[in-house]
Length: 342
Image (cartoon, rainbow, N blue to C red; front, side, top):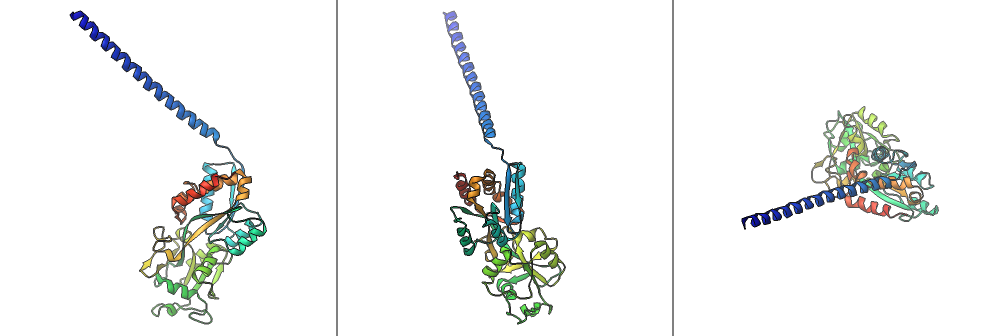
């Protein structure tokens, strides 16, 4: 009887061992199957990636240039090494003059496209949204910079800045002294500098800040931002305006004016630049405009445009180039639209 009982226990034990072994084998097989499936998926994804070639031509805003050039560099390095993305910096207005007749694929702008430019596009049978896509890239803060030796104008009110740049506000001949702005400041002539009419920054300042009132006739306007940096860095009485990114890259040569918009002085920085942030008074959007017809015709153009609005594009690189990124859902909406193109 005891032998039978022992035999029964052995049988039960054998069945349990067999079952556990079988389960273990199933788990191993399942793991192997999962691994194989993941490998196949990765291989399929790799095979699905199409190696592209050709050119993408971008021109326009000098303000946007550092950001777009950085995006292009990463795209050519990490995504499509056989595609050549050429990024120019002729200025927003000059860029549109190339974009409208179809000389470029994308046109960067530090201000929104004008009604007359939209009309010129329509003359070429190009309609906004249907043939041209407006892409908001990031936020920029219009920054006023002064010489490192300027110890008096490090903080100014928004009104003081606007008034000093208005023609005839202080002097009929526009030879403005610092003491005209505040009596305790030096009785020395203010030297005004800024980008010329080719740049969206000039247009934003003239139209958005000065409200189309005449700028001081003594302002020295330049095509190259590097020239402005050099001029201000050598002139104790200079003040200039341009995008925050150029200030960030030249902090060793210049200082930024803190602006009081009514609640105390605010320094332009990524944490303050935005439509609902403390530096909102001098915040603006920067853009790129895409020729959708070219995007449909040229795979490399569409692919690059997708990269621009991907998480690895403007969203990731804006801060590195002196811009505040937009909410992620805005970039996602652009990407969804581009992926729907046929």
